[in-house]
Image (cartoon, rainbow, N blue to C red; front, top):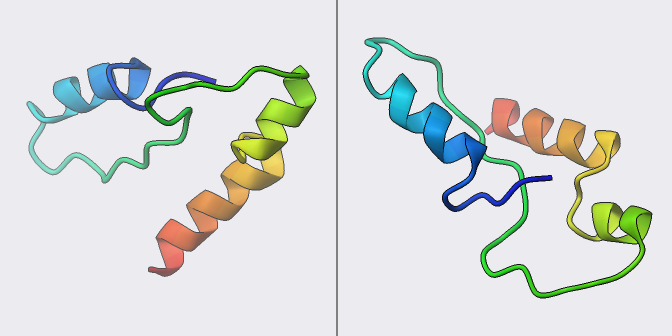
Length: 64
């Protein structure tokens, strides 16, 4: 549940750029800008950050 822009994934990506042959990276998180409020579970579902949503993003990336 982190921002895709300037978040943890960005820091990891910067580090990985120094490693030859590093595996590809899939960014999963909140889009920029984040402008919604609501129930925690509803927001997770809406941004596809449930376990199923993350699984589907990974599966799609592997297939394509």
